[in-house]
Length: 153
Ligand code: FES
View 1 (tube, protein in one colour):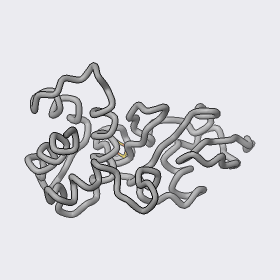
View 2 (cartoon, protein in one colour):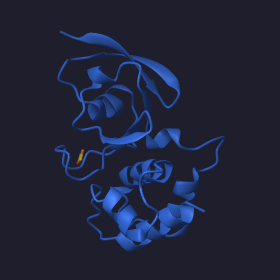
View 3 (spheres, protein in one colour):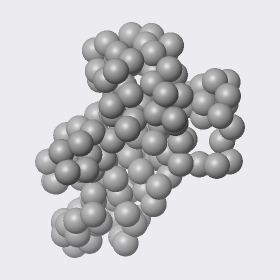
């Protein structure tokens, strides 16, 4: 049967009825209407579905919604503040860090997590490694890296 759970999404408490096998990605997109998070492979291999859970980047296609009671979930819709883009969003815009855009919200969420994690080095190689789970089929990696490094400033 369904379970009623509370999720804190982008600072708002949301109540949602979920089946035990429903993944966070599908709840965000289909139950909560947050379609900025994308479904690519649906198998944990592309990163298009990346969201933050308590500040850590996860693949929401692999994570059961029911396991996220009382977690703080941030999606791409939750990054702007008072109508201003998040610095990482701004940097992606300025550096043209996308082509088709399908991977972009996942790339941005991973970048936010990388920049907030002191354990990850600041070199290009360290950033590339930390974001290696986010695939860009258009090959915009050079501009993505430039954007992430610029957003650090
Ligand atoms: Fe989740 Fe590809 S859709 S990793």
